[in-house]
Image (cartoon, rainbow, N blue to C red; front, side, top):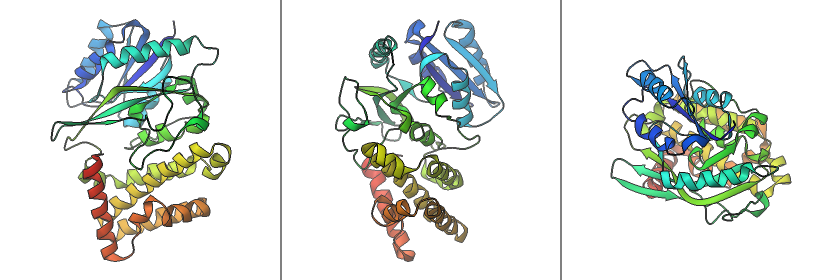
Length: 342
């Protein structure tokens, strides 16, 4: 029997916190599938914990043990082995609100009865900030109609700090396969590709104003920690280049103007983040990589390059000179404090 949804949980040395994640998913009952992908864990009991869940819940939990391939390969393996009509990734240190989950599952059951099930369900997510024990809800009531099927023609404007992230999306599984989604191995920040690449293939959407996903943020070793991001900036740049290659944004804007505008702004955000962390690194090599990234965008699409570099968000990361670079970093850190995005 096809499951309503597959939850993929990439696990890498996750023994300390993965139980909480999995237990919230199990609240979904027999209609769900959980694919635990043990990504070559060697430092703790993650493999044994995965096997224990598979033994206790054989009709719900699958386990895949693979050589270490990174978060993206965990997502890929989950998708390859998913039997659910819908697919959602839940990181092993995050969790779902169980009451919101029941409402989401009821809606997905309704979609399953349609001749053409909805392509994308969007819910809110909540930043759970460990360093000060605060929460910040990211919702989309200003962007999407609520509780009805709609298309990209019906969406409003996203605010500058408002994006669809892996935490907020539930894609129809076959759509992800049909669009050829394959995330790179051994690369952080691939969740941006996961959300961005499938968007032009989405025909129908549905939004529920529910705080479903709880995003745990603030650990010192987390991939979005600033010092960690500087060390991994090459991976951030790699993801940004893959996003540049993913779609002709001019063509998307011709067919779906509102989606094209959003995707332009998303890519602009990625260009800004890559540029800022190369500036924070500050070495001549890093500054050279920043120039190379912008030159790469120019070779792919000069129109997008000029508009993005001089007339949109990334302009703050292209202020000339040493003092300009200092100002760019200062503006980024002010924005980070205000919006608390990492």
